[in-house]
Length: 447
Image (cartoon, rainbow, N blue to C red; front, side):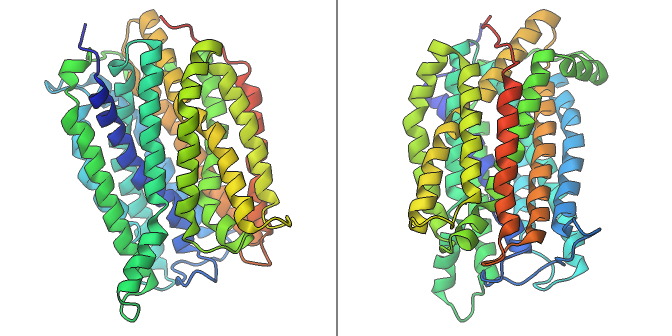
C-alpha cells in the first residue's frame, strides 16, 4: 500500500493539466481565427479560403490531418507507458520528455513562414500541428493514467478529478486572455509592432507558462512513492480488444464523443460569437472566461456532494441536457432586444453550470471503469483506456473544428453570419444525443 496523496501533491498534479490546457486551448481558440480571420480582425489571410469540393475549408483538412495522425499515435504511447519498466516510473519520465517539444511546436504553429496567403503556410501548418499534437499526447496520456493509480477510492478519484478540472479551467482562463495581452504588447509601439507579431509574442509567453506548469507536476509527484506501478505484459492488440469490448466503456465513449464535438465547436467559435454575432471587442473574451471560472467553482463542491448522494450518472445526463439548451441559445445571439453584453454573460454563466460537472465527473467515471477492469482481468491497462478515450476525443475535436470551419463557408462576417449560427444548432443536437446515450450507462459501483 502506497502513501496517500496529500493535498499539496493533488494541487501539483492539477498544475500539469493547467499547463496542457493552456497550450491546447491556445490552439483551439486562436488557430482558426488566425488562419481564416473575419475581415474586422486586422489580421492578414494566411491560407486560401477557397472551399475544396464546395464544402471543405483548407483549414478543416489541415487540422483534421494533424489530429488523425495524433489519434493513431495514442495507443502506441499508451502501450509503451503501460509496459515501461523504467526504475523512475511508468508515467513521469515520459511526461518529462514531452514538455520542451510541446512548447516548441505550440509556438511554431502560430509562426507561418510568410505573413501572406500561400501554399507554403499550409504545408508548414500541417507539420507543426502534427509535432504539437504528438508531443502533447506524450504528456497527457501518461498524465491521465496516473489518476487511478494516485487515487485508490471512489471519492479520492472524484476529489483528484476535481483538482484536475480546476487546472483545466484555469488553463482555459489564461488562454482566453491572449487577445488582452496582444493589445497590451501592440500598444507598447503601435507603429512597429503589427497585430500578428503581437499575437505571436503572446503565444510564446503563454506557451512558456504552460510548460512551467507541466514541469511542476513532473517535479512534485514521486511516482514510486505514491503509485503501485505494475508494468503490463498484455500485447497491445489484446489490450485494445479487451478495452473496446467493454460495454460500459463503449457507452461512455459514444456519449463522450458527442460531447467533445459540441465543446470544440463552442471553443473554436467563441471569438466569432463575440465579434460577429454580438459585435463586441475581442478583449471581452477574458472577462467571459473569468465569469465561467467563478460560476464553475461555486458548483464544484455542490457536484462533489451530489455525486456522493445520487451518483455521477444522473448528474452527467442532466448536465448534457442543460448544455444542449445553451447551444440552442447560440443560434439566437444578437437577435434579442437585450444588450449584447447581457446576452453573452447570461449564456456563459448558465453554460458554466453543466461544464463544471462535465469537467470533473467523466475522468472519475473512467477511473472507476479502469479499476473494475483491472480487478476482473488482473491486467493494468490504465494508459490504454485513456489512450482509447483520447483517440475518440481527438477524432471528435477534429470533427468539431472541421465542421465549424466548414459551416463558416455559409457566413462568417457581420451581416452574413448564418454559418456561425448553424454551429449552435449542431451543438444542441450533439449534446442532446449524448444525454440520451448515457442513460444506458451502468454506473460502476466502487470496489
